[in-house]
Image 1: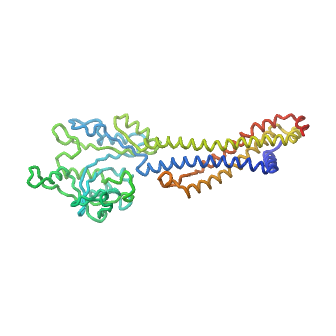
Image 2: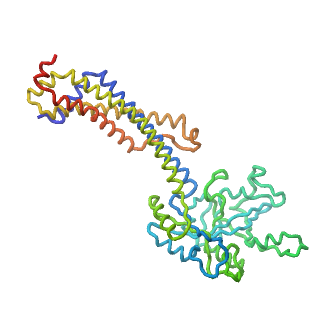
Image 3: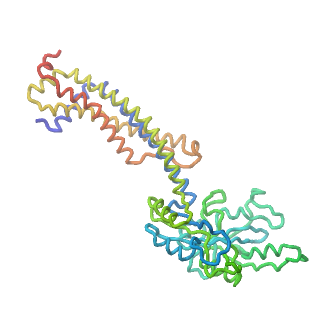
Length: 450
């Protein structure tokens, strides 16, 4: 009974006796393995770049929840589909939800020196603020003693000269606005502001509204050319914003808030939307469905990502299929090599059988030979694929083909391991029929063979 070591040594020696044939057969496996790895790596690269691009716009685990009739007019009683503090608390209790932030947006006018801009001031919770990348300064917090702003990195492009009306989009020059070191004045009562712009002798002319000095806590990360979901907004803590709005408007209805039939403010705050933060990407779709079943409109980047992933998977399957054809051709070469080896070693096989060698040992010897061809081709193919991948990323790059930065070809460790195992499997599968034929050869006929 031969041991595995004996079989392995005999298999390697048999391959070494036919060096040229072995090298040519291994070369086919090398090309096939490298083709599969490179093709699949391109698909993986495209898929990961898509995820990176979408995630650069904002979080992939955040769901935006809005009411289908938020702007449906006045209401005497609470509309169950309004997003209120009670709804926010209900959303917090859903499985896999790690936090919920109501979003309250008000339109304001910001001024600094000769420049001004209309802006959306968004009140959000600390959970939401912690999701925003900060480039300079810090995030506002519920612990602050005063209302402070986190300004979007592209907000400066919205400022224009109050006298000429020209700004960044007219001149191409960034306005001379310094959020961090110079005071920014904010007008909250926009209705009064518009009315104050009427001629002094007009019937509806009113006194200009009060301006409030709101300090800037920090700036959103990024340059004026880098866009994200946070680029054009200004964020503040929602509790402090509510308190500020109550000081500004006192008992008068807050603009944008629903009123009762008498035009008076409701006894609670109605939010524009809510941001639901899910613990994992895999749970976003399930949480979305639960919220949708509650009667709310939902949106997340997972909708976009799922569509992109389906397209990427199709591309990856096509590319992998092209590479698999090369490995299939290599498998034919392995089968041919093993069949030729059997014809050349027919007498040797007959002698082994006459001497009492186990039939399975003969079969295993040929399977080891074909498997070893697959192994050598797989290792060399992986080395070749890593080289090709490096050259693609070095001289072609994703920027030239997709417009996105990053490596176009990406080979994770699991792909190398899978390619090597697949190459060995293909080699052994290709050698199975020749090995079975060798096992079934008649000993006497094999010995008489010339």
